[in-house]
Length: 598
Image 1 (tube, rainbow, N blue to C red):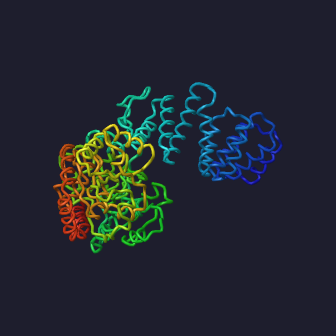
Image 2: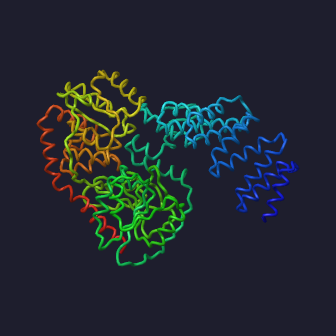
Image 3: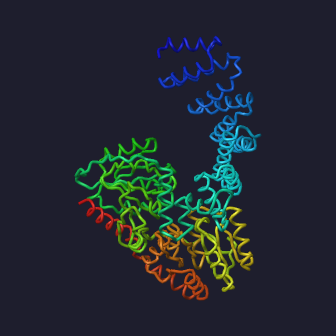
């Protein structure tokens, strides 16, 4: 479209002789022709000059275009004028809420969606769909604000309108986990427990059941529902030889993140004479010294934050990467669209998700024989690539003495302190019952838990009372910095691991503090993670295989302070060699990769 044509359209809009239908057609033509600003200007002129009763439609469309262009103030103005003319246009209120959310006016955004959810009934199907959409936005935003009770309530209302919403069910289930509402899966109108199991996210399923088949099912269903990706193979069938094997790590967590904090020792341990190590990085720049250390450990750091999946995959392909290791799996922030294009000759996964990804474009998973024994391999789409020692490496950092004492954090000086600071959604009724029995059988013990959110804390306190345990036996710890939390671990006597979702990076922090940890190893990869580390640390006797054995092991320690002291001494002695663990892990990984590439 020529400048003359555009000027003619602007004059036509100003004259008032252009219909709404013509406006929409011309604006779309301008937009498709690369004249987005002129399309918005056409709407602006038409709106200013028209007396059409359909003005609200033009305002809505203009708001969409302004929002897409990043003009949030303009979009808000357009949507507000639209709603003022036609309060029944509920989609405009939904869009206004989304615009306000992007402007960080969260309470106003919630108010707009609440008005949609409680609007007078309109056309049945449209009314239901828009109210469902509004309630889902309320649930999503309240969950991100950690207002879990209102988020759960909004999603329950949404499911009452339309039970056939796997995504809403998925979040509803995990919200109940975060609040320690047990049992997590309870029927809703139109939603059965088996519907909930089918929609449960892979992450939530790791905590719900120690069943490898259910975990595989959850991963596969999630991939089929969320990642409708067309596989391609950008990498050639035969790898291109280079002087060094090219290994790439794909991650958005190369920073002070639970995964990133495990990686610096490993990347630094690579044999750079045989391997050229790349980071394909979409991590946030957190400005920390650790982030700088991580970046310096790679031979090359390629920033792909601003590249879409195809451009990122093409970049990896152009680097002629032999092995690409994804550090996300099914965890938050993953970019499976890159791996689905097969930009590398061989592709694997490590650390980000401790279960099968069920992604057909992943060839192997880095693990160890204890964590993923042969009996579990039928439930994995990935082939295990075994390394020596624990797949989460031990190390030996310098640990300073805690800067606070027990009194400073509300702990009795003479108590046996049993701590568990794992994520709160990993708790469950069966394990909590074990903890309560331990407290009842050991009068000197207190349970030191994370005060994660008021709803979970209230549930845990109520459960304790139901078990006959007075509330002073539960000591609640507020969240603090990672460094302070690591120091506080040294105030405890025994660490209580969760099951079936074991501690991972937290277990390494516990061992760094030379704190004995009792774990329960079950039938799934995730439930054997901490046991793998305890065996590598030389204290395999702390690994149990049933709730009853777990309970007895903790009680034996709680009644024997001399044994706790001996275990701490053992951990101190064993830790003298832990600094070698990252190098051993990487050496065995490199050996396995070389064999695979031959």
